[in-house]
Amino acid sequence: MTPPAIDLRSIIPELVIAATAMATMVGGLFLPAGRQHPLRWLAALGTVVALGTTLAAGSSSSPAFAGMYVRDTLTRVLQATALVAVLLAQWLSGDYVERMRLDIGEYHALVLVAALGAMLMAASSDLIMLFLGLETLSIPLYVLAAFARTDPRSQEAGLKYFLLGAFGTAFFLYGIALLFGATGSTGFQALAEQAHAPKTFFRAGVALLTIGLAFKAAVVPFHFWAPDVYEGAPLPTTAYMSVIAKVGAFAAFVRVYMVALAALAAQWSTALAAISVLTMIVGNVAALRQTSIKRLLAYSSIAHAGFILTGVVAGSPAGASAVAFYLLAYTFMTLGAFGVVLMLHRRGEEADRIADLTGLAWRAPALGGAMTLFMVSLAGLPPTAGFLAKFYVFTAALDAGQTGVAVFGVLTSVVSAYYYLRVAYTMFTGQPSEDVGFAGGRWVTAALVAASAGVLVLGIFPSRVTAFVQQVGQVLR
Amino acid sequence: MTVPISAYLALSALLFVLGITGVLLRRNALVVFMSIELMLNAVNLTFVAFARQLLAIEGQLAVFFVVLVAAVEVVVGLAIIIAIFRARDTVDIDDVDLLRG
Image (cartoon, rainbow over all chains, first blue to last red; front, side):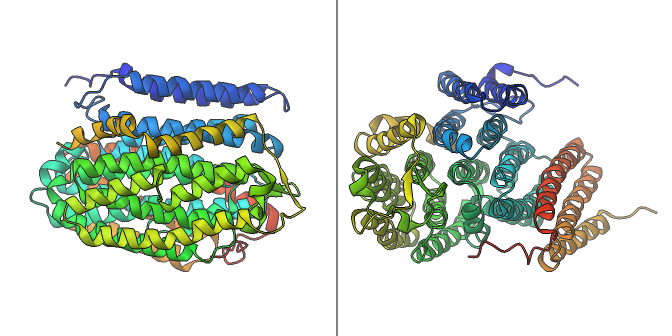
């Protein structure tokens, strides 16, 4: 028996992130409080290096590490998306973390470890690897949700996220165990071979796996934890987890359904189409009556999970590219919207009510303009990233013959325009509250500029980005 | 006399369902967490039963990863539960209800 080839060169981006996370954590132990500022630079530097190596690394469709890990074009695109999200989240959260006197080293280390999990999920070619990636992503997020540990709301968010996350993990694992029983292996290769003639165990395993992933991606009917967790968690954590958890979960959706179970597409596409339609309806309708911006964005993230899922339902290379494009667009517009809220405070607290935005556009035109841009993009109106992202997923669904899903997608987008544009409307009318002040800094400003630029570039000059994400389609052929 | 694999699978399915019932019905955060651990161990039993049946080492390998991850979850979960107990002197999840949807 020969030992499996260990090609450390193929996991350089992961190694960089892991090393940076450990260095940041250890640095946080030794640097005195108040002089931990360099750790932010260290974390950002590590992320930039990892992003560079991800983009520079070649791609190969043959798995490494005994069939556990594959660095193909899908890996590259999704890892790059995850790292962009991490970079923006670091810029957004740094000032808040210092202002609220949270532990800087630990915070950035946890953010990086969660990113490592999402990167491993994107690169997995084995169910065990996928499971380890999922947990590497989830466990730091439980801690981050409870990170303001003396704040009862943050504690409660952490507890809910932890209990329901672990509950979802159990389903996910039971699915893996049954798939292992049906195929005799946990590799995606074996899964693809058995998908042509699925046994009962195989079907049950896929169903349980779907429940587990649905919990993590917060799609209906397993979404109920998301609004409470998003509302209770500290604002930068909410921003970060709303993006990174989606990147990881949809990486898994693409890997498992579109690549490994392609032969079973006729069966899972119906189930996922139903889930997708329900998610779009519930997310968008529930968002209509929210008064907290965090809860609004929580339901918005549920709704967007439904939109992204339409790309998976399409099951085609165009669908996979559309999912990748959507994830990138979603990263910019969601982190941008959270970034605007992070620049405000209400008497030192988070300014998390929609009413706190009243009159903002007249007090700070640039900030109001940026928020309007993000809301327009989230609503899916041109000329923004959100419009093209929706356009691509719906076209992919139509081309695959999933007309019903696309129709519901367009209809619910119209509903969503109401609550997004209501936020924009609030900013242009009424008297600003005396309680609300600005808490910006250079880093948050930089993140907002980058996110606005991302939303506009993806919306107006998308050709280079679409060429980049279209590589994803190669994995499906 | 050998026990057929179906018996192991039935037992693990039963344990898994008991775990789900515990999560849905019990109100003490610690007991809910114990029910989740029961579900994870039901999964482990399935893995080793299949590994024995199929003579595939991957099933036993998976159990090690599950045990490892479960241990990490215990660390994080108990830390969160203790933080809540210190603040409110209760770990009843019906009393932890500041956030309502």
